[in-house]
Image (cartoon, rainbow, N blue to C red; front, top):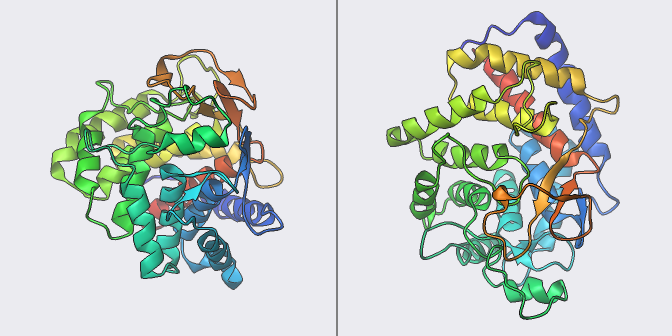
Length: 357
């Protein structure tokens, strides 16, 4: 695709990406991992490390200087649970989403032994619903209920139901790990669940773009012509959500853009490039470049939400307590790692399109 990116963006892009990379490298904890999002379970370690590590590992050895990404991957492997999965953080029961991101990261590094890979895939597939083919965060919610010290009568119907934001990532993890099992069922669940406006409803996210973009990534990994209409609808919805200044807010109720949402929107539009989106993409990139902070990061917002365990449709709920160490809360990535990794990936995608046009 030919992007008519101007020299102003080209001149700033490489420096911006390098600053973001340096911020992410310098933001690791003493144990070598990344952590972010302060919740009842503390900060996420393995989920966030898998996510950030995957964002960096997608772009080659240039971002694995002195093998430090390999060291993060080795640390994740050393913390694989006896059940084959990974949890939100130390001591937290394993879940499908954390496991998916760790698998995606490890699949890029090629460090996982066949036994470790089989155990992780086996754990992940236990979270696939035999009814609709989707993936749920917790297949056995009693474990997380016990961890949270909740009464045994509390329903986990929501947390153990199929979730599109989890399914999109799980399908990618299966595909990148070379597993054929469960993939088509997951993709059918995604195909059957697109909203008429073009997006996919999220479960754990404040906006629709995260789930939508990862459902598109899962479909793109299989490249079926039958999915052209789904892609077109989703990308048109994304394009129409752009604000006048070039950013995305991910909600009609928000008047100012979010860096996280803008980066996701750009990634979604670049998945299947269309010349009609080139100006929108360029304006979004320019907006992001203008919002980078002095330390190389981008500002955080309340992007993660923690619904009540019994809630099956949190996207219909309007009020969320901000930064509460509780359920029914919207959480900011206070270390700015999740947002910065997402923007880094979007800018690298744009760089690839511009340089390889």
